[in-house]
Image (cartoon, rainbow, N blue to C red):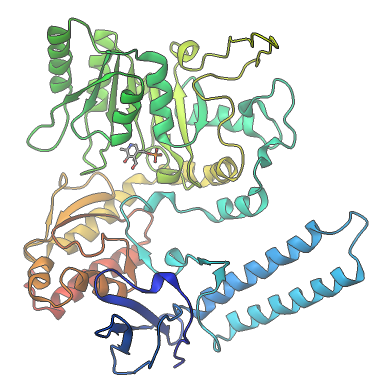
Length: 514
Ligand SMILES: Cc1ncc(COP(=O)(O)O)c(C=O)c1O
């Protein structure tokens, strides 16, 4: 077992007494967690299993050596790439050839170490940045990270297209992102629209920018906009920026927003303000419970009143089938980094032909001195939107994203399977609609794991630590009352392992299991 040596490492001291978790991997999968405890001066003193680290101030994070070596090999290959970037087109100089050979030897060394792990096993760094190995080393149940994890194709795309304006190599007249044919960005826009069964689509830097574009085009100062009582804060901000007024449809006792409640709210707004709302924005699945709201019924109501309807698909577009025409949505907004396996910030805004002239209007201004005009740049999108790795990651993930959306039912089945196990621990409850129709779920463990936290010296952190010890992360650290988790994209084996891990922790602390 190798003890880490002292090193300046800003992230090694936690806020809550657990100063550092050190994972020493013994073999491929088994991990042993060691805890460094602060002494009276606030210095790390001894390690939880009795090993003293005299004078140890900061310790490197130890991790799975094979994963670390994989990163080291990737980084060394990047260094090789840099040799080419610094060379003349004529070819490498002798010194560059030498540097290349050295790096190749390094890569071979790393490959050998991946095959036969051993030796140094600390996580490497990128300058002062830690390497992020959470997705490789753990089962991550973080509520908002699950469906934004990149596909291998997206990871390769950002290696190749990470440079700033990498989309612009072959940008030709009329100089607009969605018209670029190499790489096939124009085709991608058409495919996006077709996939969502919408008339037009644009890529945008996050769902929030979709709300902003639509609200900015349709809402004037003092206009009312209807959202749900479970709406995301970014919808509020988009309305606030335009000077609009938010009107919320109340949720019912099951935390669901209905078409009837929406119709009632429209009437109330008309009665109180004298005018109908200018826009209706409803989340298909909300971020608090991930309950399904009656977007089909609500779209019908919107049509009856002639109010444009924005369907917020941040928690559907990219994981479940979405059909704008079937829903009756004038706008569909999706989030690339939340649900389309893409780099942040990315997303999609689909627009019906009816509203395209307003929301996708092109610039009309001319400079008073130069008389310059800017052709077909779209005002609400501020011209081009995703100009590099973000867009290419979306495009690279798209075939997999389309395919996986067809298997949403299976994802929901896994989610329900896990939660069945989770609920077996007495006092553990699902607060979201049951049975689940989504993989994101709000749970309540006040009557189970929180009972342990009440008397445990680590308080709520005992639970995070027990989970981490079993290779599970992503719950809100320290929370043992109400919190959220997401099982999206876990394999069946991982789903079963997850369920067993929750039961195992319950057994360890003598919590009754049904
Ligand atoms: C329901 C909902 N809508 C919108 C957003 C904002 O998405 P983005 O980060 O893509 O702007 C979120 C983000 O958490 C969300 O949960």
